[in-house]
Length: 105
Image (cartoon, rainbow, N blue to C red; front, side):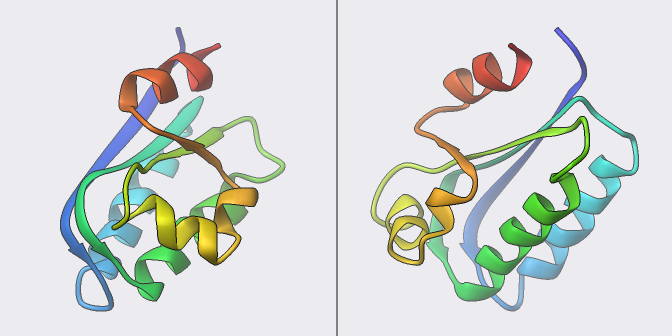
């Protein structure tokens, strides 16, 4: 298995906290991992600023050798991603274990 960076967010992911996620994603991508997983399992609220960071990460990994996935399950995370159509553009998984299996394969 290659090097996979996992970034776990918790609480509210909104305009106040999204910059922290953006910095964490950038720091991880600077190390050129083979995979990047953003784990939203413990996120209670996913706002548009958080979704924007997820799409920025997708755009940064698109066309590179880094595989990108998001772990989101439930009304607070997967629902807004599906409603906005973002779930159609990123690999979305219900658990970190399943995401790790898919990104590492």
